[in-house]
Length: 95
Image (tube, rainbow, N blue to C red; front, side, top):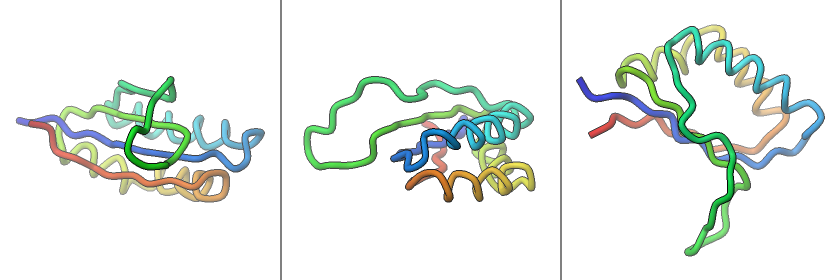
């Protein structure tokens, strides 16, 4: 079964409160077996401007990645992310 991934790009607007989102999100992600592969780090955007922060999270399956995103715990974290950052997230099935 192919793995599932979250690919997120973010620009943090409130760096003092963003850790509140990170804590809430990490708890929900851990509860669904998610594993951070990329969390920030140096990057290059050679073709167009974009967000400042990149995150990739691996799940055992696409269904697990979807279940985590739609879980009540992560939906509470979404409210924090939307308050403290601009972001784009896509859920992708692995090859």
